[in-house]
Image (cartoon, rainbow, N blue to C red):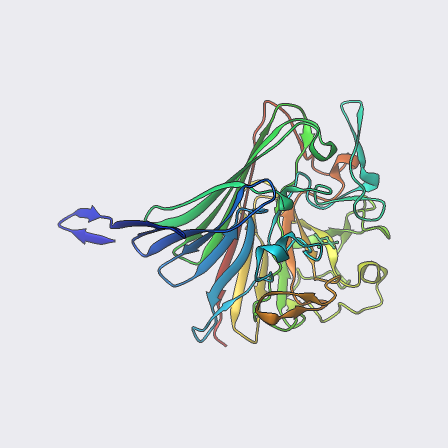
Length: 380
Ligand code: BGC
């Protein structure tokens, strides 16, 4: 941005070529390219957001999927800190464990794939053992969203829209969803969700990026702090039992002090044995209204830090327990704990658990949710 004699002049450059469009304004830029075509002939676009510090976020229209977040380490070297694939085929393949996508209509599990709403029983796909997971067989991670990107001099963003029709995957009501990803000058990636419906329906949207702040190896030495005094213990199929259990004195205590994710991950605690590590919803202290700090992560190897802020009442800590040698980008093979997810959300199985905060959206309401991933570095 140039400032002259009290006047603010913004420089905007837009250029379009065969391969796509690029625009830049005051150190922010967006680039859009077409990276493939789906069987229904719709084009899959890749939007790349860049700020003046050289931080870049790549997002695909397929699944509104974050495919890369490139941020500096403590010495200024840039690395991509999310897991993913080199090609669209990877994201569309059976081995994709929801890398970087938006999951919905209901992120996380619904017990037995069914719920009762206003006296009516709804049946959903049981795509995870006996339960429904992440919106079903073709959830929001497997659809091509309408998309566009733009910069305004203070930030750069990409907007994604999807209309999920009444009955899709068994859910009631046509749900109109908008997700906006914004990259700020301060290396924050903000995710804004909005949705409206024409019939009452459960909605629980989340972002399913797997982070590894070293960009390689596993995440067991990453130090994690969670602003949560309680978590929701689960049964053997990872459905909450309904109890809110205190974390204190257990391997789930990331509240008292930050500790390496791997410090107690192999403890013989029945809750850790069930899923081979952490795969649990934490109840955020005071969470659920304004944007509040949910988690802080520090990677001693690279010096990178990440904070997660959210308006949601919960966050699922998933430590990549089921990663079993997924062949990912840059010839990396992701094994157990190759990445961690912090999925901001309402609690799992809320449609069947009246004591949990409600996830039901009604026609006269608007679903609004915000999560921010803020990247930085810490010098020892
Ligand atoms: C769930 C895991 C699941 C993973 C799918 C996470 O949100 O909590 O249980 O395996 O998503 O990749």
